[in-house]
Picture 1 (spheres, protein in one colour):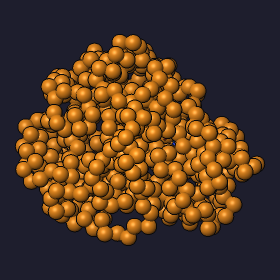
Picture 2 (spheres, protein in one colour):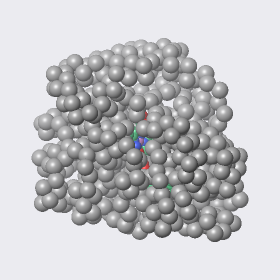
Picture 3 (cartoon, protein in one colour):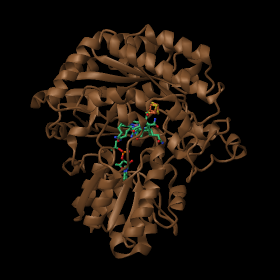
Picture 4 (cartoon, helix red, strand yellow):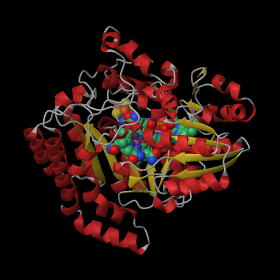
Length: 521
Ligand code: B12
Ligand code: SF4
């Protein structure tokens, strides 16, 4: 069959700060290609709907598969699916990915017949069976693991046997120079591990993978890295180098092969402090940027988000990261109940530290515990606003004042980052990039004011809403349950307990000591 894999368009964040290659979609596309199909891929983060329509009209695929990691992309995907079905009625249309897995029934329903199937869970595990059914026996689609259709659902999704099996179909991306993160321009993405053993209440990374944690072998990781042309590399792992030995083993392979890249990774403060040597080693290998999930600047906030990293530990982690001489970015979660004083306090605190501070808004998502425990009523059910940049819970301040305060705080922090210490270095880096024809980083800076604009964000709330996110289960059902029972309702991949986590005993104990322990598995 002729298959077209599609990544939807950009969200606010992707317009300014970063745009990364759709690694998950590339992995699924490669698995489909190995099953003997002709495969193309289009990324609407860098191409337009016009390009998509041209491809549909010229190539006339038999099967179109959309990647839906982000809830905010649901309406765009549903509309494209309807349009495609109208022009190619026999084309099989499938949606997969992180957010699609948590809202599968609703997506099939929104499609009104245009979406034949949502394939939940890891796409590599079931895509070949789905293609087989779509080509030869559409009645069998509802028997594929993870399949959700209007005519019934398949068995639970399965895990891929080994993360070493498939490599991403990087060659299918048509504009590889368009991917960047900050001044790592261009940047490719790579995966060293999958899943997360912690269980933070606002996050769905662990519920998707059943609190499992699997590793790519050091040889495969280094082989994949060596194949990359880009000098910048974003490591997509939720928490990098949880397992110190694995981090060292990959690093040693990289050193042995003499691979030189600049890296960006995300990790937790307590992991950084526990595995200091591995991060020092990676600094020598080219680690330049690190994102630390701090989430709150007071103990109450940390408890709320179920991060059992103490504030003291977080500050210690920041201190240590500074000694490494790398650029650190941290994230704070703004609650919709913040008032002017709270924003002012945050601005003051952030101005005192050299790190880049990013602020997102507390947003309950399907698949997270917050989704079923949050007691405040949603202000909106418009998928497009569930991007952690818009307020979907009622704000204490009038909404326009809340956005003004938030954007003012973000702007102060953004200009601090541009002006303080870094400005001459940034200007030099920008010039170097432009001379090499890489314009992503500079263009992002220029788009900042137009993108992060209070009037525009407010107007986003007034758009007509065609598709509404399903409501959380009634509170009466969830409050009665034990926390562990609550967690099991959330899983996409069933947990395999301790066996599902490729970490040694001491790391397992460390994880247990730093999580709240509500989840089973
Ligand atoms: C790396 C990452 C990013 C990167 C890169 C994203 C990209 N271009 O793909 C960056 C830093 C850009 C990013 C940004 C954001 N992210 Co992010 N991100 C992740 C993270 C940590 C890993 C994703 C990843 O690459 N995994 C590795 C690949 C191999 O897996 P995958 O993409 O999930 O693909 C697998 C399956 O999903 C499935 N699949 C995927 N596509 C398809 C398609 C088909 C047809 C099929 C069958 C299967 C399938 O099969 C794949 C292989 O197994 C996830 C958490 C997580 N663990 O999932 C959060 C996560 C997806 N991000 C999240 C959020 C909120 C954001 C932001 C909105 C945050 C912000 N500050 O604004 C932005 C918006 C980004 C945007 N598109 O504009 C949330 C999503 C919440 C939601 N429900 O919408 C997540 C779940 C994290 C969380 N805390 O809960 N993100
Ligand atoms: S540590 Fe917490 S926030 Fe980070 S990926 Fe794991 S569960 Fe999510």
